[in-house]
Length: 265
Image 1: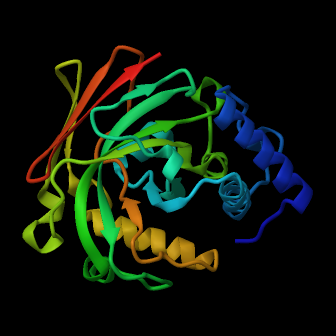
Image 2: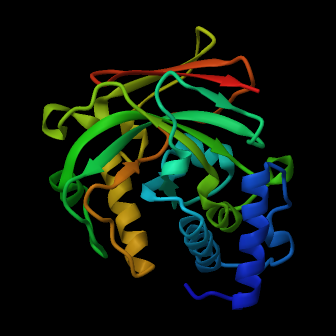
Image 3: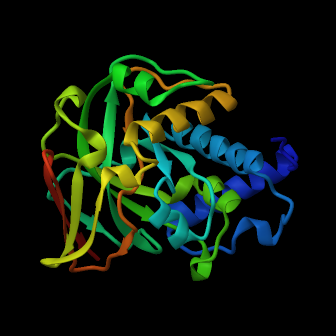
């Protein structure tokens, strides 16, 4: 897919997204101004944002697959998955209090994360390739934050906004993949002591490793590969749940333990 935006428009839209992310305010979806914007344009803006963050001292620690479950696609009104980058500044420790003051529409979802021991490259990367290159898997909670006003967006704008990436927490009990039947792993999301979402990892493209393979193949289309030692979130097992100050969230995973976080002002 070709880009339709010139360099000037890419930089300007990147600045718009960066402002919304760093100062926590909502913006209209980018296609309102550029209705012909393509997915390639979205990734060009995302790449510019990544370059900018790295220049500001962020360290790239990995990637995330987004919109990989049917529940999530339906919730967001889109029809294909996407990817986004993760930096050290987005990471939060287990049991921490995450501030919502610097977020616009925070929501949480439970995911299975992969840590790679070998580099992966596409095109043609498969779930088997991913499992072979994986050091271990662990449970994760992703805090996503769409920066678009009225929660109205499309895939091109979401990609430009780095897949709504905001915060992530890894923890629980890391395990080797050969010890697990990944697609059958169940996850339960509790908010303030009540179960709000549940699902099995098979909801993520039938196998979470397939979502990571898809991510590697999208990276290949951008002329990049997934380095060894990457932390990769494979996408939400459940639909995302809105959170507010005072909320306490626990994600419980079969065989992988649980993760707990709280939200503050």
